[in-house]
Figure 1 (cartoon, rainbow, N blue to C red):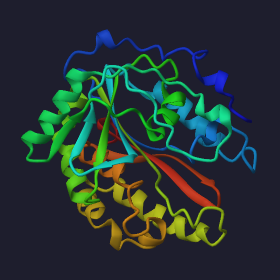
Figure 2 (tube, rainbow, N blue to C red; figure 1 turned 120 degrees about the horizontal axis):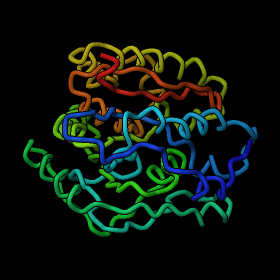
Figure 3 (tube, rainbow, N blue to C red; figure 1 turned 30 degrees about the horizontal axis):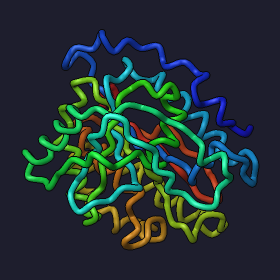
Figure 4 (cartoon, rainbow, N blue to C red; figure 1 turned 45 degrees about the vertical axis):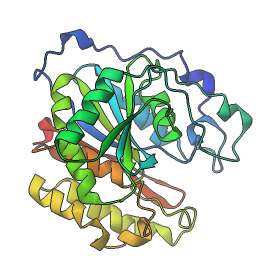
Length: 295
């Protein structure tokens, strides 16, 4: 099945949850780590044709698992790195088409979700209060690590979104700390999403030799995510020592794994679980959720 642009840009209804019923602390939001695919892969023909179908179906159904519709979303994308943690604070961020060589129609995709300056200021303030470098960015738009999966997750584009950058340090402990600093947002109706890839070695995609490598790392990563919180944090801090870690995320190119650290940090004492796994381009790709119900 090829997923067309028209299918996901306004014809599907927003999930039927009423955010007005959410009082602070009444229904804590989970945190998600999701795969965002390869460029605009869900909106174009691919070879093999059905390569991304299962992932697309998973993403399209994920919002229905929430207790209520989010009041707002904090999206951590692998495609934005800054010296300080930066957060978009514009009211109507434009899209950044930061992929290259794809069909012309993929550069006409639209996702007009509003920003939320007040939430951006709160995010920056919470990070600063935790001693982490933080700033707001009024000119930054939404990159494809945000809008490509969001077209499937929340296609009506009505929920306010702020995008949070990664740190150029690529320090897993720092990103776990950033998540911890923001965990209170979950009790305020804010959904935190980490958008990356559990395997991301550009040279390995499509190579049959990558299958066992990605399987080994995925098995370790699943065990780390599903471990008790203290063990989970230590394992994720030391992820580079895991089996096949550097074959799955090469040195200085681990940015696609780091959104997981942020949402795991925000999980606090909630446990993690694997939600989805599929083999695409010879590699295993997985999604994870942190939620009180798993504890």
